[in-house]
Image 1 (cartoon, rainbow, N blue to C red):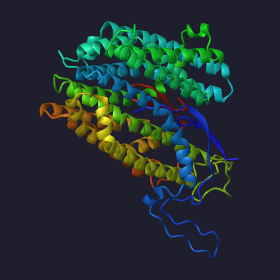
Image 2: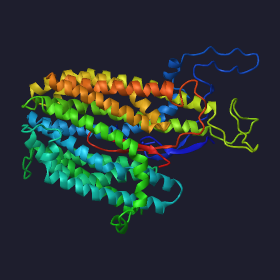
Image 3: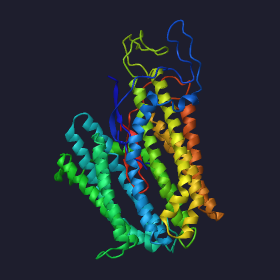
Length: 568
């Protein structure tokens, strides 16, 4: 049988920047490719008299090869994750659609601002409890169900306490929080305040649901989270028009109805997860009210620090972009158009998050599959297996392991680039049909077209960018990734400042995001080709990177992926 490595299976197999995906799983490692050397090298002759096959350019090897073993291997992990994650932005699009039918640009603008504030608060609270998910998988994988249950209860307790503080902040001081994205006296403030206060009531259930989501992924159950997600989102779809526009004895509530519909769906999701975990004996009422030990939390803080920095930087970027869009005009047209464009962009974003998690999964798996005890007789050339005392020792990652990981990475980049190009073209092609669905106002419809085309260009850069980010996670380059993300965010914020000073429009806001992606893409590509352990000509690795464990935190934009080394 093929060797296996306990690393996360992406998505359904299962996010993050969203994702979500991606609790640890046992991923079977297919046998090596026929050619195990560097991709640019000719294949070895199959017999002494055979002629070596001509060298194939590396970029050609990165392209799909007629559904060969490597294509099946990469897409077999990525596609189920894409399908699962696509549910979230599609339901979010329905929310935006119904609010858009109110015929009020300020309602869309207020909803967009409030959702950004809710997301920012949610993310800052959800990071630590959600990162407990890899510990659930580690415990379950070793057969220690009691330890797995402890991890789930600790995460739910912590999520509930921090969620209560977040709810208090959003309900008691919505104006202060909204001030992060809305300029003083913004006309959309009234709508945003009503929406945020009601939406905040679901913060604890949303956090509990994210822990339940991650726990089931850690238990390698990919079906239950999808069923819960479909059930809760179906409730949201039914309640949206009923509460927004009213019917019978139900009064018309407008944007507040949209908030209540979403909150009700999240209460339902959290309650379902608690009931299911109780039935599975993964939680107990006594443990749910028992504070976790400080010692149990320290590994989470250590392991997640670099990625917390990265996600915090991303938060700064998107809050800044939302604030700029909200400040463009007092009618709310620009802010409404930005919210609609974001919604259209989010579907492609979650697809790329699935690609990112696939790289974080398959690269360390390919490297570790070739780690084995060897002797000098069967060691790859150039790898000394004898210790100073002549005893056998574990070899470094052999050249074939690096070549396999490089082949997987190249093919992932190829597929990701093609998929992103397809998503970008689809966004532009369907724009005349999709954009009018989200608003009845001609001014808002017209304002969507130009920024949506720029967003499609950003979508195009997502292909190689998210694939390389996943590869970087797979080789353990979390600190480098955090650093290049901070550089990209600084570039984006500078672009937004110039946009404000020059009074440029929404296209410039998306142009700033494009500059952010270009900086990130340059950094991660350079690392992959020249600095990282998979760079051509690099010496074999002394040891494989730690398995990467990822989980997806569902949130309004489509998901935030959280990945940390398994050793944390």
